[in-house]
Amino acid sequence: MSGEALSTLVLLGSFFVFIILRFPIAYSVGLSTVLCMISMGQNIVTLPQQMVKGIWSFSLMAVPFFITMGVLMGTGGISDKLIALANSLVGWMRGGLAMVNIVASYFFGGISGSASADTASLGSILIPMMVDEGYDADFSTAVTITSSCEGLLVPPSHNMVIYATSAGGVSVGALFMAGYVPGAILAIALMVGSYILSVKNNYPKGKPFSLSNFFKQIGKSIWALLAVLIVVVGVVGGVFTATESAAIAVIYSLIVSVFIYKGLDWKGVWKSLEQCIDTLAIVLILIAMSAAFGNCLMTLLHVPAKAATFITSISSNRVVIIILLNLILLLLGMIMDMAPIILIATPILLPVAQSVGLHPVQFGIMMVLNCGIGLLTPPVGAVLFIGSAVAKRPMEKVVKATLPFYVCMIIALLLISFIPSISLWLPRITGSLIG
Image (cartoon, rainbow, N blue to C red; front, side):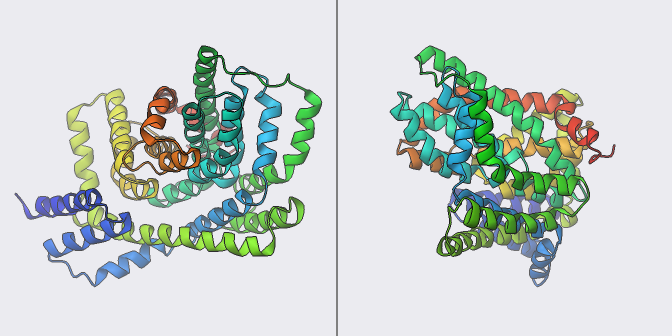
């Protein structure tokens, strides 16, 4: 075995060993990097330099701002208003509250950008409401956790910013615009699955559709929805960068939450900011560690080129390679959280994706959805754990109830993977995508 092959084994082998031993993901990444550098005779003094270089990015400043925006809006009293808006739109259908759950997640996801925040906030309201109306508790939880993944696709998603940075030069504005249609495709797929199960189990309908009530609820929700408009229109229109738009969105969210919806007082604002700091500490140290890990993968070990050669040696068929890419990402999602997958796998798999004609923006949407599905799968499914905790239901029963929805999500993933226009049509007509 060559020295380079041995170092690759040390890097990846120790990383998965640390994961199995339940080390925090950031420490697993950092320790495996140190072991790899020692095995290669590298000076580990360069490790802090690589870590600092990884977070020394203007575009990455958008991540803490978007997280802060999501926390402020999520705790600022908008959940009830978005649920009422969704209810006025789709509550009349069979299994109406399940449809409301899915549509509300689409709206709320555009504000929080987080599946975990969506599940915690909307789930705490909608799951008990659905159970009271006669829905099965496990079904209600399954609808909540799967629909929360829409928020990963619908802008502004901080995971899109992380991907754009990892991919090197991909337009954040293009990624933002690319997420709308795939998010809608996912929502429709989940609604079809929910409708079939609702008819089978005779779940109730809501009140008949009322146009006047719909416009009334739009009026109440408009302040929340404008937050998304500020970010997306500002970035795509070239008025300001993603980082600048995120900073403006934080100020706007603060004003809306405190003075308009009055869901937060100043004491609540400080508690929300404390929550943001806790989250950001985890995210930024992970990005820093992953930068050093990526340096070992790309610069020292040349893993992306080797991975591309290996995958293409299995088959030269474009369909087979795309399916393999999805399978790799799905498997990684079962054992790793979303951010480290994006940070570590993007430099390795993006060249392979481009070699079979996938646009970096389309691949970004594929990656985010794959990671979203991973958030719902044991053993490291953070959203699955949160949903089970909110509903107070055993995780194994929630997983069983989620099985039909996994099928819906896989169908949506395959459509996104093999129909480029789903991801690329909107960025192209808005001029945010070139090529």
